[in-house]
Image 1 (cartoon, rainbow, N blue to C red):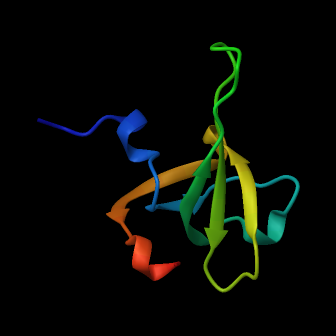
Image 2 (image 1 turned 45 degrees about the vertical axis):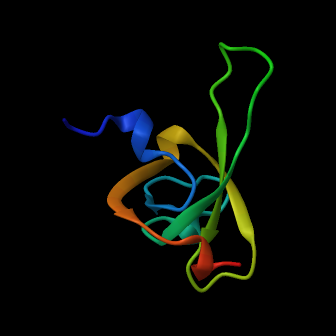
Image 3 (image 1 turned 180 degrees about the vertical axis):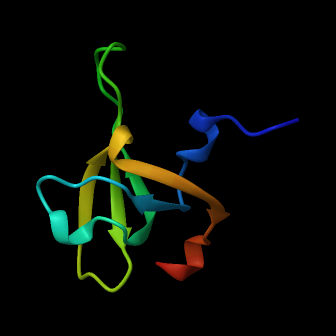
Length: 79
């Protein structure tokens, strides 16, 4: 059974930043999802906290700004 796009945006999933108007220098970089918001309004999509490789902090992105790589990282990689 194939993985859906929704499944690809889970904790520790590796993602590529495809679009970042607030931080254009991060476009094209890799990172991992370390946080996912839970909006009260079901019509509001979640946002994702991504720890960008070789960057000192997490950055929040919207779903359309990220592309899954199909790889997962481990909890131990970060904690």
